Length: 379
Picture 1 (cartoon, helix red, strand yellow):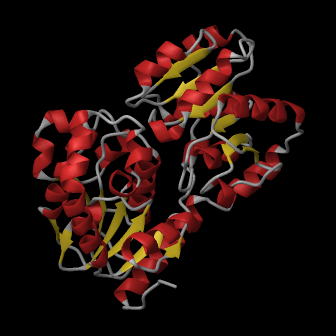
Picture 2 (cartoon, helix red, strand yellow):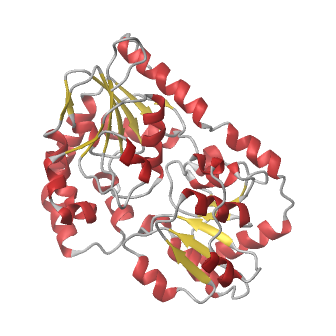
């Protein structure tokens, strides 16, 4: 735990640390903002999340004793409210990083929730689980969702204040909970500071040819299937996909020889991929969308969906090409537009710097100070 004042205890709470995603990077930024803060989470799998967590004091719920759930957090969804509610955090302020569960952790102090979105599993189940969820998932949704929504709403109302990652999420928080919030964009991951670590196998596969990059969890709403389908019609192009998820096997079956899948790579290897790519492709339904900002920090443009957070963080013709639909044909049109445009890497990097970690840390510390002083940062 740490403080903004001389004796203030601040702790961090997060849903689960079982993957390498944007939210897990944001938690690391929070930990750097409040050095020494304990990190509380329902599930923690050190092998599957970022190695920096090994240097933090991570405390877990009873659910973490079950290896199956550490490796399959989606299967634990019905249990996560109980696991979160069983955790009590001794702190003056608990900085909650959540998209649905950690806001239910208990404390005698005050909770400041940094919200990526109200739980997709409860409020956007078809988009999160896909059009054809399994029998068990469908049964759980039918039986438990009304009770879980009550728990979710009650937990949200225990917070002293809410911060939304984007304007879209701000509206969603109000719709789901009737709460006001302020908006604080997440910082792009500081991958740029890492020295490049070339990957010999990737270099051999590329054989000097240019490539595009897709950094994404392989979930239905990420629309990676459409990106893969686009490259089936573009055999002369190369695509590197970095990520893992439930759709991995299906995507590998669909992919041709011009697509390479990678996962669990180091930040240095990711930095090398960003520095060498022609563009990033991100046509997912994102409430914010960190990877185009990460690409922009390297001076690389992106192809993004004209939806959600991308509309707030990307500038058409300066940092990105927008496509109107998450389809293979739209991706192909976007690729042609990237090829035809003249990009200014310095202008792209300058835009990314508006979302740097220093900006985020200052605003977050100010928000904690406001909660402590009982000055709500809501608008």
